Image (cartoon, rainbow, N blue to C red; front, side, top):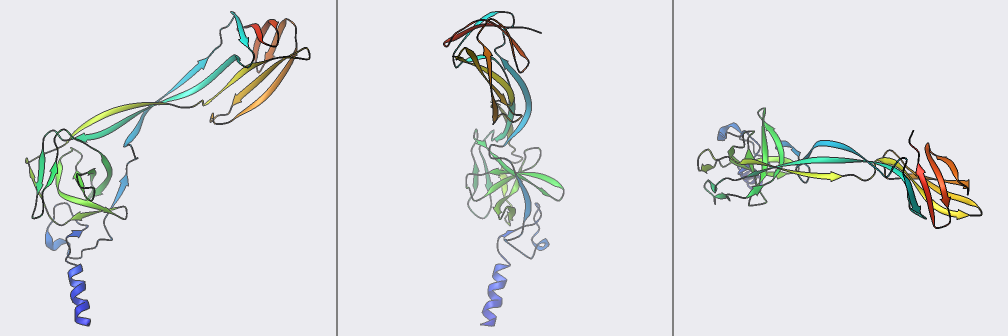
Amino acid sequence: MKTLKILALTLCLSGCIYAGEVNLIPWRNEFVSGWSGYSIVYLDQQNERLLTTENLQDSSFKANKLLTAFKGYPVADTKYYSKNHYVQESLIAPVDAKMFSGSSPAEIKGGKKYSVIAKTKIDGNVYYLVNSEDSTFVYLVDKDYKLQRNLGTIRNDKLVLLEDSYTVEPEGFQFEPITETRVLQSDIVNGFEIRYEGVQNGMMLFTLMQYDAGGSTGEFSNYNFDNQPGIVNIAGVKIKIFNADDSKLDYMILAE
C-alpha cells in the first residue's frame, strides 16, 4: 500500500499544468502544482476605464421674463449632473490563426472580437489574459498584442500555465486593439428645485427641494407667503409675483 501511495504522488507531480516561466524548459519546474500560479488582476466586467468626466448644469431660470408655473410644477430649478466618458479596449484577430501542440489545436477566428479578462506579471513582464474559444483556457498576449506560445487556465484567481509549448500559425501572429466609447450621464449630483403648490387660506404655497452632494437624497422645505403681488425670496432666488391662484402663478425671476 505504501508503494502505491508513492507511485500516485509521483504521477501527480508530473502533470501537464504548472505555474512556471513563459518560455518553458522542462527541468526548470519539476514540482508541479495546480494550487499555485501567477497572481492576476481582473479588469472590470465591461473592460472599461473612465476617460473623462464632464460636469453639466441644467436650469430653467429665465431671468427678467414673464413666466407661468402651474400648480405642482417647478418655478425655478438648477440641477447639476456629471457625464462620464468611458473607453473600452478589446482585441480583434485580423486573420485566422491556430496554435498547435500534441493535443488538439486552438483556433482563433479572424474578424472576431476577444475580451481582455485580466492581466498578470511574469518575470517582470506584463501579459494580458484573453478569452479563448474554449472557456477553460486563456491566451497570453504581451504589451504589443503578440500571441504567446502558451495557454493558461485560471484557478483560484491565479494563472496556471499549461506545460505544452504551442506553435503559432501564422508565425508572429498578433491581435489588433480596438477602442469603443460609451457615455453615461449620472443622476442629479446636487441642486435645487422650487415648486408652486397653489393657494390655501390666502397664502401662496411653495416647496423647496434641495439635493445633497450625492443627489440620491434631498431635503424638503415649505414656504408660505401672503397672496399678493410683490417680491419673495426662496433660498436666495428672488421671485416677483404678479398674480397667483390655486391653479397657476404668473411671476418673474429677478436677476442679481
